Image (cartoon, rainbow, N blue to C red):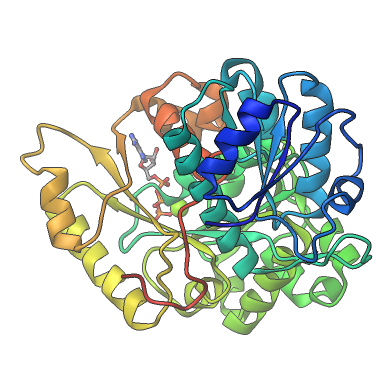
Length: 395
Ligand SMILES: Nc1ncnc2c1ncn2[C@@H]1O[C@H](COP(=O)(O)OP(=O)(O)OP(=O)(O)O)[C@@H](O)[C@H]1O
Ligand SMILES: [Mg+2]
């Protein structure tokens, strides 16, 4: 079990968390709750940061949320869990990067499972991060890079990438960037009704790759708080964009943003592989048919051989149709991997692309929106799936 720090005045809660953490728990009083992470941590006299911080938010939910937000900004290598009413706290908690909310009456098994999930998620995050101890000024935490891939065109990459990015940006305005790496025919700008002043071509060929401030001035703003690097206007411009430039761009963006979402062209062209080289969370998408599953099997096998398939990957089947004569089990057997999510066919998807309003905003109750929210919850608030790190083959 990992190191758990608990701030609570309840002796009952202290004893249950202690048991759930197999004794690896230091308990502190929660009153008064300090405003600064460093103040809280200084009370533990511990050299290392806790993997999981459990804050009792039953007495002072505002104070607990404010402190959780500071931990999220300053020490993202510690996962924060709140104790309180999930119905009241979950949305606010998600906005400040809290990993989970546990009800005060939760049983030990539930607490144990939550602590283990959060510890796994932070372990993955730390694999891509350099986190300093409190009191040290520099904080260099690489953001997560989510790259949306499909073996064939028209599988729904742009739909998934744009909505994923918008959903993340709504929770964390200004902290998410979307890159349209479908350099020839990218349509992220159309999907989000953007009229970019600068495109990928300007970004990789000007001073932006050397200067983070210049880079930020070259991004296009979406009303959700998302920043976007749109594809060039002309397919001809794509020739001049090299995979080295793409790699440098993604790496630089990951230093500046909490999440970098990458939409790609179908297949595994060199620029996509360059993005994968910096990807922490691949999102693999295919159509729900035999041809789509076979294509995905080859793509998964190739990524595995290249050591680019982390366990953090999500596998999504689009256009899922129960009457298609194919089951999810059939697809899983073909691709030799688990399917994490299915997206049904929905007219609202095309309507959203046509209007340039993201599906999550235009049709939040649509069945596809609901599934996309599930995908979102695997990156925010709820813990991410464990990854062993970049360039390791999944089991
Ligand atoms: N679940 C869905 N239900 C209905 N239509 C969908 C769904 N997913 C995607 N579409 C439609 O399929 C088309 C392709 O979707 P999208 O552009 O997102 O795919 P893509 O993988 O980015 O395609 P490309 O490879 O051409 O870039 C669009 O017209 C979109 O509206
Ligand atoms: Mg596309």
